[in-house]
Length: 614
Image 1 (spheres, rainbow, N blue to C red):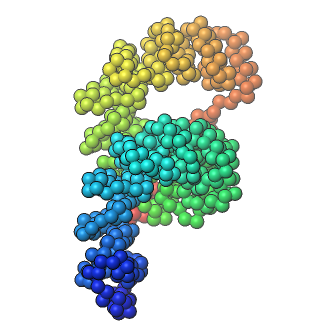
Image 2 (image 1 turned 120 degrees about the horizontal axis):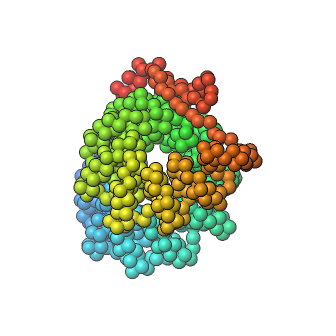
């Protein structure tokens, strides 16, 4: 609203401003609210709202509770922060529940959400009774803050005030408990609901998927459809990750078709979810087709398609897409950079990785934990352990992930003693290791032949940290013992494992049998492997090589015939080399390189300009 249009409107409404404010009747109060309400409803900018605020101060309209509340509501919707709205709220001469709800809702939407929880408590202390509109905003804030204890207190008040059957309140409770990992509590609230709407169904489905129970999420989606409740785009976005985790391509495609039937297939969030789904299922071409059909690409869209290529080991395409994103002027974020750095790590593209590192510096993201951990991993996989250590040493704060990354980097380069030294420093700084940390530590021990140290660290998982060893840690121990020639101990270790050994565990023992030429034990291990999966092609090949080294040519011929029976083909090896910031990919046995170009050198001037813009 411009100053001229405001003055014109005020002249038209001037007679109405003469209404007395001291009359006690509600009719007069409502009448005096009407002209200013008209002005406020015409307000579409924060600057115009502030001019109206001055007018309200000079005319006395701020004595009207409805006018004050409307000011607070508009301040919440027209501003990106709650500063101005909070100032207006604090200056209100009187308040009602609606006014409290307005400012609590503002903090719930704009943040910080902690303030919504504090205001809810202040509301109680000042004698105001919350209603069914108050609780959803407070519960949402508790969910964002992961404030489970405060959320449970709110739940008690919900029951106390008789709103436990309100469908919107119940839906928010489901979300609160699900985001806090308390799926059983979510189920309890959901099962007690007399009426379930699309919000409650979606909250329960999303809760299961987010907490790693995709089969239940998919099951509830089918129950929802069977109950006659039509899903919306948000529901489909919530259930698609379940299909990806369960590798249920058919179900995901059915949901894709269902979205077309519902007419929501153009929803941007849904298209992004479909791109992610097809990418995780290995159908990158389908994912790319969906991306190319989008009229506009958001940052999330770019991140999703770039991640789809990276997950499918298409590192060159990942970097090419990132370059296209830069050329189109799209601002990247830390998620983009983590994905591109991971692609560089897969390719061993040190030069490109350094270039991305420079972009990290230009964006002042060097302290981002996810990026620095990715950089440590990238430099280690590219063979530059010194650069990996340099990134680690510059970290202002080191999380368990940071420590695990540098331990793993040293382990992969055979620097076992350095890895164990980092592990000792980590414990001295009071950082609790997790299962991934122990995998890195045990890998360091097995690559450096540190048998006794490996035994001690494996035992400390349960005795000191109450971490139950998983198959990864057990496979490391079997490989450690096997490489050291202690095959019998390794076999007994597998037989006494607290969990069922998988193909990786038995495969580590079979590899040790080949190293030390123990044919008898190798045959016993191979039988176990075939029981697990008769189509385990790499172990057929390994066993064939063991028989060949032992001179058992009849067995070699038999296994060769079996390999032909299962129509197995060895996947050709692949190597990548970076020359002048171009990545060339070679397949085993080929003379001509199949390469994807990453023309960083050709775009050097352009990239310098872009870096300056960052």
